[in-house]
Length: 193
View 1 (tube, rainbow, N blue to C red):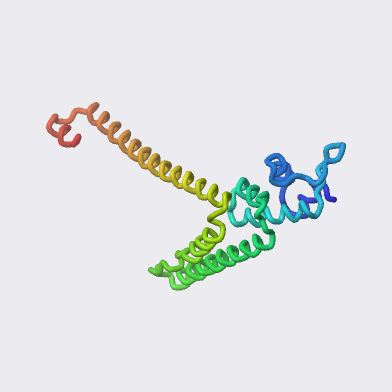
View 2 (cartoon, rainbow, N blue to C red):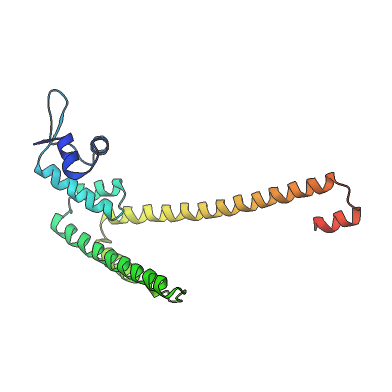
């Protein structure tokens, strides 16, 4: 058994983060002493390792908890999928780095956009959907994704409105300034169009 401080030193995860993981039910200590100290066994450390791998893949904490707590969760299969996704991301990053270096060395812009293609990652997502699409957890995940995309669209629309309204405010301010100075009425009318 290891204390929260020892786990923090071992993993690089802050004590505060470990306390937070406990508070949200993501990583409960294996035992809590009478004095209130959290203790973690190898099973808890294994779960923490899975959590950290999912975090590296940009999974939200809530989804990680749902995945790990699912009755269908298979650690070895999850690890194989994590490795595959990490390898895809690694290859994609390698291509981006090579592309950037080539531009740097040549000193010119290279008009090749294939390096930005995330088709392999999208293909992997399609395979995941085929494999897990019928599960309740995956359907909940898709619903959250739809809500997120709806939210993203609303956010884009709001940003457009904000930009427009600030442009409108600038125009209104300019018109007010023009009205304060004496301009020939015909010229003022032309400017307001």
